[in-house]
Amino acid sequence: MINQQTEQNYQGILNRYGQLLQLPAHSQRVTLLEGNTPLIPLPRFVDELGGGFEFLIKYEGLNPTGSFKDRGMTAAISETLGAGSKAVICASTGNTAASAAAYAARAGLKAYVLIPQGKVATGKLAGAVAYGARVIQIEGSFDDALTLVVRLSQNHPIALVNSINPYRLEGQKTAAFEICDALKKAPDWLCLPVGNAGNITSYWMGFKQYNDLFGSGLPKILGVQAAGAAPLVAGHPIDFPETIATAIRIGKPARGEQALQAAEESHGKIIAVSDQEILSAQKRLAQEGIWVEPASAAGLAGFIRQVNAGHIDPKGKRIVTICTGHGLKDPDTISKNMPQPDLIPSDLHILEKTILGE
Ligand code: F0G
Image (cartoon, rainbow, N blue to C red; front, side, top):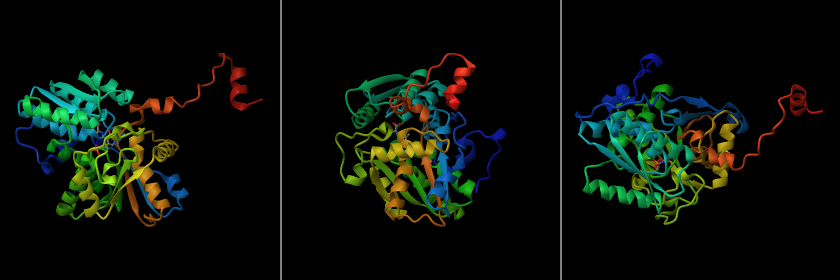
């Protein structure tokens, strides 16, 4: 297996794992030192469920643009820059847009991003704008936007950097490698949210590759969709997906078949959870100091649901749950329901009374 590099010499996922990724020789490395994200234990959560198992959060919100997309984007942008592209395009529920914009800026390429009108969280949109992308809203869903950018990229010299692009998956495999390297083997379960289904596909590819090379074992995969946007659970596309977890508000996942295959081959499952379960998992994570955007809490929500239903017995197991994006990406879900903070005069006596009571 690959040894952990020290923080001082860490140079991003392509430097660390490039020899295990199917990237063309013409690739020209573009990096923001993505990856190398921590595995954070949730000890109080484990106690609440009766103890006797290990539960770790892989906090992908700590990537340079605040989501796991940076792993795939360093690979896709490196390839397309080396191939001579001048511009890239993607459809996005927000995180891909911010990541594409950042890596395109880094590479000196123009980025175009298509987003569904009014359904992209503030932090993501602001990111895409800050990095200098040309942001276009469409009167339609993510699925409509994806159809448009696929067609456009076929007719014009603008590279598609959605996860249909195979190099995105190559980069995203590295999260599975990191988990195996840190734990010395694959966990028993891997729980993660599923939207367009690139990430679950990448993890399964990564775990299989590492197992073939190093005998690191294979996890069961629990993919989790939001109930209002769960085509892989329903068994058919959803025309009007709806969920508070806007990142995974997707009705026709591009990598749906591969996601179903990953769940089946791993002896895992793809399930759906309600928005309420997602919000309560988001709160549970925050109670242990980890603030994630709603979609990122879906993996935990799914795990809790499976344990409560008796479908997963965690005893003696090691579970890794992927938190895909940072809470700062979507501050509105919190601030909309937030009570106004108390306002007091700048006075010690009043402060004491406010905090300590009468
Ligand atoms: N979590 C977050 C925070 C996401 O942004 C996404 C996807 C997912 C999970 C699901 O990953 O699509 O590979 O199954 N966001 C895409 C975007 C669709 O445009 O940012 P997936």
